[in-house]
Length: 214
Image (cartoon, rainbow, N blue to C red; front, side, top):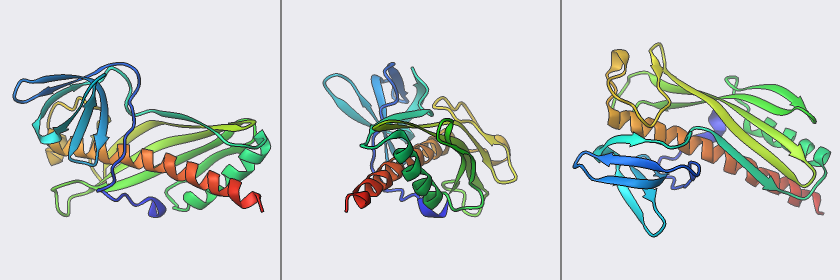
C-alpha cells in the first residue's frame, strides 16, 4: 500500500481489549495486564499502577485474554449520516489507490468495505519473500459519528506458507524457519499498520470537516 508505508520507528499504543493478557519471560518472570506494542522491538504491559517495557527477544510465551487483531473504533464528528458517508468515500478513495486494494461495497446503509493489503520484508531474512497481510476494513455511519472496524486479518509469505496471526506463535514457520522473535516483530509491524490506517482515516475525515467550514 504505497500511501501507507510504515515507518518502523513509529510509536503508538492500542489497548487490546478489557481482558487480561499474560507475558511469561524466558527468565521466568510473569507479567499480567494489558499489552501495548512499542515499535517492533518491545511490548509494554500495563497494570493499574505501572507500565513495564519488555523486549520481544526476552519473551517466552504470550497468553492473550482478548483478540488483539481486531480493531473497532467509534469517532464522533459533526455531520449527518449522508455527509459523513460522502466524506468517507473521498478519504477511502484517496488512501486506497493500490491495485492490491479493492473497495467491495460503498453504500450509505451498508457502509464501506475494503479488502486491503499491507506488505513487509521479513526481518533478518535479506532477500527472502515478503510477508503479505490481508485484512477487511469496514466503515459505518450514523448522524454525528462513524465506526471503523478492521478484522479478518491473515498473513502469508510470498510463494510461501501462511503466517499465523497470533500472539502465541510456537515454532518454526514452514520453509523459512521464522523464529518466535521474528514472528513477534511481524505481528508488531502489522499491528502498527492497522493503527496507522485508523489514524490516517480519522485525520483525513477531520480535514474534510474543516474544509467544509469555509
